[in-house]
View 1 (cartoon, rainbow, N blue to C red):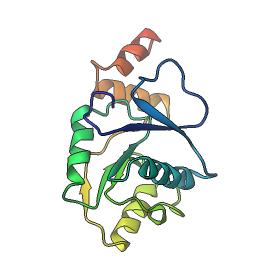
View 2 (view 1 turned 90 degrees about the vertical axis):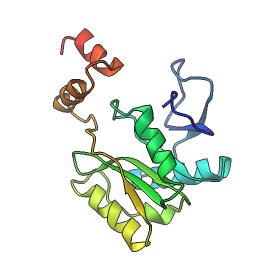
View 3 (view 1 turned 60 degrees about the horizontal axis):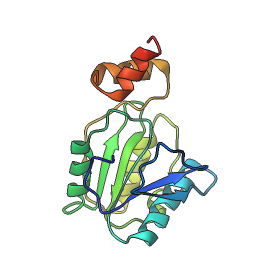
View 4 (view 1 turned 180 degrees about the horizontal axis):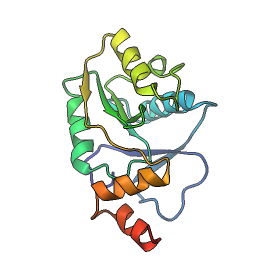
Length: 165
């Protein structure tokens, strides 16, 4: 993410950042009870800091590249939303030209059809959506192995090898 051109980088974090966080990142607290509320709040809080299109990604897709993130940001010039599906039925990225909490609130999260429900919500709002490639988010050891195989030169794959996987 740090290698991707961006106007501002914001991390919605539950807790305090460590020394691993580059200085150019702005940290905001996560707020809300469920994941749908936390995502909606992250969009709203980031939009208050810097009005404009927002691309939100999770931290469990280490194979994300600057090229994919650049594509997402560029897509918002011509589309209302950008969506990156995850192999488990969720999504790894959601970008919105005009963030609106109602696009996320009430969408069932951590469900095999979360992505379908989210896309349905965007469709009902009559938004144009640019789709990105499907990626695997890392929820299990098998997911970690699959991601490392997809991106063998990544820091993630190197760390798995260091751990003996």
